[in-house]
Image: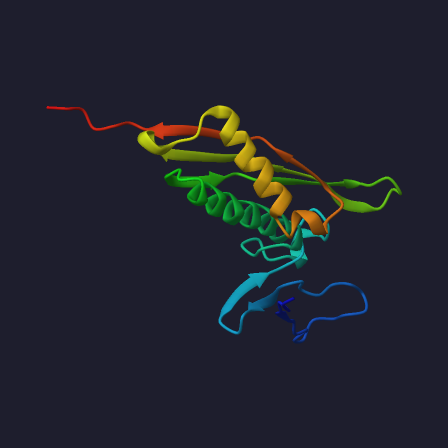
Length: 163
């Protein structure tokens, strides 16, 4: 068992508060070293009270899912002897009413695209199995009720031509 911590810090400054006209900009600090500017999403709170260039909680949630999945995938691929050259994912999350009508991230779509070295790559079935196993092992995915959809693609790095 392990404990993972994040700190949140927000300060009102001189803005009014009880009328709801205050900035949602705040800081999230991880592992006492990395600080991220965060804010509410302009889809949830009027944009005037949000920080446009900040990470919102919904995006951070999607980010934690794609990061966890990727880390498991890389570990499993390496263990199977496959060589990953790069991995990228344009993950998305849908904020919508859930079964009780409350807003929730109801679906997360992970769309990883992986490029392998041509001489050390899985076949399509093994590739899908790696993603299925990464999903099953991901601590974050096992911790949420949202539907998580996997839409992986891959490519091979061409071998250098013989001269």
